[in-house]
Image (cartoon, rainbow, N blue to C red; front, side):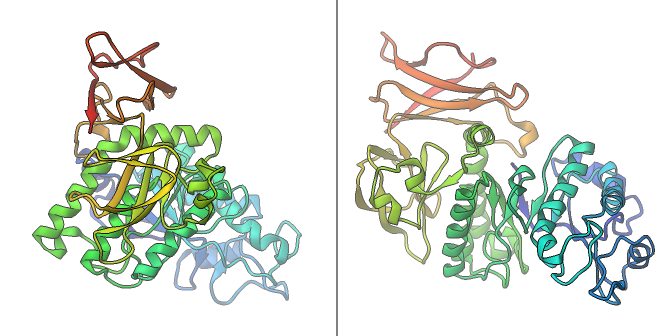
Length: 428
């Protein structure tokens, strides 16, 4: 659940940039809490030293005349031998300490190409992203134990090889809104996990847009800042960097909630980002709303898609509690709600939800899962409910809190292991 700010390197498969000690560099980064991700793609330019090798080993998709390409080689992933060769190149990097790959491109399998599988290019074109996602995710899992790749292209079944992002959007308010619509649509297609390039890709973002998009990004299953530089928060000034830090710190505090919802999504196939009608299908107005969403079961997010600090927000049936102020709103209706001072987005929590928070840390390896604070929104609900999953245990727990004789809320029933040090805080 890392927050990425730009990729560190683009690389050819099987190669690292020429540093005196690349493995030592990766080791030093890891000791400082960083994980190295590399960009790669399944095409080989004629200047790439692997271009000739791929042709000589007959791993290239042939043209309609049965000849190898004279320009870019598109790797024939319908050929099991080509897949093993490609995975071997990636494996060398993973064993040097690389944590994950961005599996970019994958949409250019030629419709008129000749493939080793013997089927038409029309058939293979759409299968190509699935084969590509699988090749990268499987070798990553084999070496690191993590089945993950940041992939741009996909096809039916690619949800087995998470995760995917929404391509290279413009650096505009409209592209931000379009990114949300695209992510919600992908979730309805059975993809639980999804991210997007915060701030857009095509040009350096306006600071106000960047922060508003970041607020949307931290309430996504995965969070990534990437695009035309500069992207580093300190390049936008001290005040911007402090705002950026506060927003990212909120995500780190919410990681226990995010992890539990991700675990739930992995078991049910439900998207982490979901339309209002997914969670409230009987509410007719929710079917018409496309600029707000549920982040898991209990949090509703309404991003700011222009330079404003308040906006109309539709709330589904029930009661809702503003995340920062604790103010309660009735559902099944529209409200004009101001964003919190801490984050440029409107964020509300389902009445009666217990949201687990963690103490602030510098990276996920430092998270203390025994010092959880359960923040209760709508304490008069009975019972109060929430979810929790400790990564090393892997079991998803449904929490129930009820008010004890002394007036305090306490977790009832079977408690998760290691929860003796938890605290409960009532919001609002």
